[in-house]
Length: 268
Image (cartoon, rainbow, N blue to C red; front, side, top):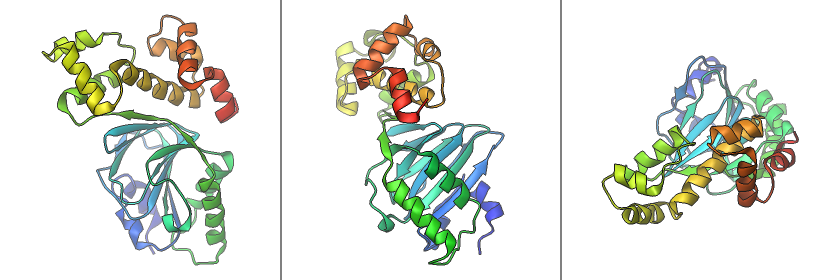
């Protein structure tokens, strides 16, 4: 039997051990780490659900970054290479799932977590990993899988290209999302024409520069809405001239106001 006292720290460095367990669901939890944690790049046969209870997880997968706030989770399919950054003092459940036990998307996605699934995950994380087929834990895992398959998708991904110039630009936008510099000004920093940089963005991201930056704003806004950040504060942090300008942008992007979206998704 694996020492579960060591798993809380082990899952922040390597989850490959999960492939040694035939159980359909393995649930691990790390509570209130005092500092940020980061896993190395890794993959495993089981699919993975990363579920922050408090704090935020940032997952890097392929050429995208996924921001995962509380009340949401990220689904990482079997054998997809990834790494996770966990914010300080976060409380996170990570669940390793046998994909043959249910139908899940074969691509990475974020999911809206229901209160029931959250409670199931927390309880499973208190139980032994090597449970027997047909046991009470196994039956609980089956309920968890049923609930998991029914979750709704969210959009918390931001493309970060491998191209060195666009990678630097993406990280600069992330570091200062309220930055209002034009594409021409960014192009000057990279000693290239505006047209050349625009073509690079379109080729690597399949979006215009304005759409790419706008998508980042939507991702960050959704992250903040999920943790009940006031709309006024979100507007200010993203650099909008007024809260009404932000609401107009949000509604144009997602078809509803920030408050409507929050109520429909998270009930408050």
